[in-house]
Image (tube, rainbow, N blue to C red; front, top):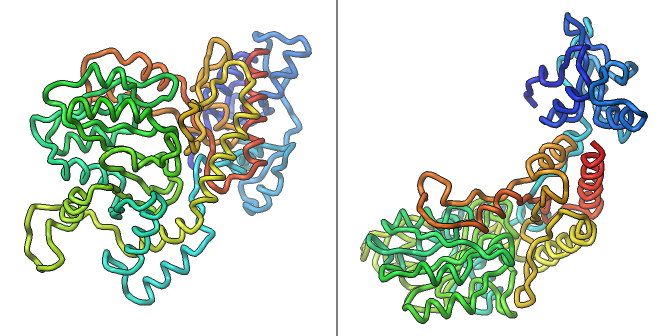
Length: 482
């Protein structure tokens, strides 16, 4: 890893406050005091500072009086394995010094045992099925795995038409084109979401109209949808965000009353249910993503679903250059190349063989986080409405800085320094250049600025979840004492 190692260095005259400030900026948990020639004199971690303060030191005291002079160190010319072997539960930082005693690099226990935010679970038949594609030569969009994957997904949703496509964004774009959304039309999308729904509206030549979200679900607020319907509105794209379903009864009622279509964005919610019914079957069209961090993955890829035979026929036509299979190279309309390859579908087939266990594991992950973090003051757990069955696509929560005593961004830096990857919430669309528009988006702005997502991949272990939770508890307690 390339890093600016000078950020880990402070002059020997630095105070404890200087050390804490540098640690707070994110330097992988260690600061080194150096002499005028940048030779390392000693090392301090947040634990060293905490112990000094508890022993009666004050922030203005010289850090040198508390530094560890007998720290474990590695040699720049030594084999990497030899230096790594010096890391342990107790020795979490091993500076690599040159012959003159100057810091060249640092090994961190946090980096060696890093917990990623998400990793795909590829321990099933993925390799066998992809190898079959390569062996038989069926690697493009023609091949049995595409049809098998579509059938599996159709069965998963209870019989909807399911069309595999090249990405979740392609699914959304096809959906709007199949509904003839175009210039002069408006489509209502949530302000708090990933940008794909707004992007595809713009790509259709239409106008995305942003609506605020509901604090109790983090998803689009039906009341704000209703306020933003105009004579130009043609459709609504509710996004089942972070695995929690939208209030679809209210959204569908607004659509019926105003003659609008509903396109569900289910990218983050495969397996979630609304009043017992799976997302993707609640509107006119459902759109799914199989990016590597989703419930199932094909690397890139997506699925568009519908119970409407006429819409399904148009989706198929648009997906494949506007050509009918019965007449080669005859184009009825100007379509797209949004097909999924047989290679991707082979991975999808293997993933769908384990989809129930993946969904169940996501729920277990969410419940374990809530059981460990739910009673900590200042941590706001994710929504759980009685009418919705969430899957905790990625475990996400809010930080109330007034109560927790720490901001979301401060916690992110400290977790990163301890080898725990996190992610902030999406930035509200109304703040970003392509989508700026006037209006009040109070809830969206508040949730976005306080939200953090924690490691949640299908294969994360209970021990890793506990390490995340223990680390958060330790950070909050340390921060309060300071």
